[in-house]
Image 1: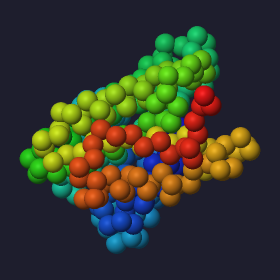
Image 2 (image 1 turned 180 degrees about the horizontal axis):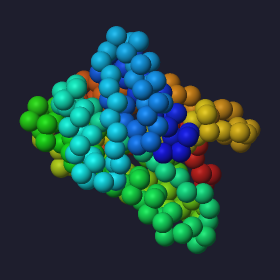
Image 3 (image 1 turned 180 degrees about the vertical axis):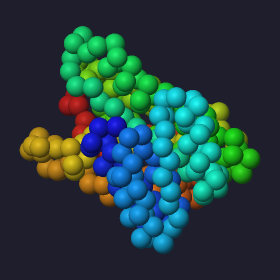
Length: 232
């Protein structure tokens, strides 16, 4: 993840901990930061652990889920928030940069969801929340950073497909798509409501989707963008 995405992931996890959920903090290289986040989560009176692994590698995904299960039990809520963002025009990015975006955004969502599903199905309850990006919902031309937007568009389609496949299993699958969050913005003068989304703005639909109040809502995408729409 980019530094911004890591911060968003951290804040979302702490919001879930504040709501009473035991949490596992995933990291690939930032062990110290993950340990700090887990300690902050425990301050809310919940159990917290850290799990390491490359979420684009099937064996690593299986291993990190096994570590989580041994510490906290079966995964009931999965938030797929990984989102590497190579910067540049689509035709200037290397194939490796394309792979980084597609594998990091899409493959990680697929692999982690696939690994979490069996225990959720056995329990008859589960919540999967995928991170999209607001502009990926529209048919916009995005020559800058295109692999990222293409991968996020695929994540939203995967969200719909997985919701269809789990509709009889007590599992809901939804997406949350921020436009810009408070730690990613330099100039907000052109942004809706004159500000970016706060972490609390992004956390609100995640907490709702995790609740029993959202038990009949699946396959949906909430754009947390302040009402940012194209003019007719």
